[in-house]
Length: 52
Image 1 (cartoon, rainbow, N blue to C red):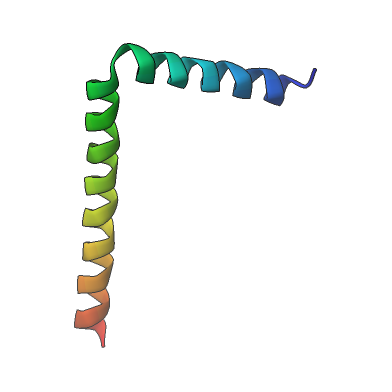
Image 2: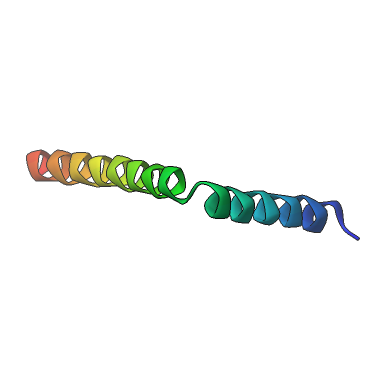
């Protein structure tokens, strides 16, 4: 097997285990990532509005 496939499989198994064992923490982590991405998008929009 290719090393990338093995590492990918290990990551998928770890993420599934984490979601099953601690779903609330996993959901909070996803929400934090989404809020972070939202802040980035809003900052870019604000920058572009001031630029033009």
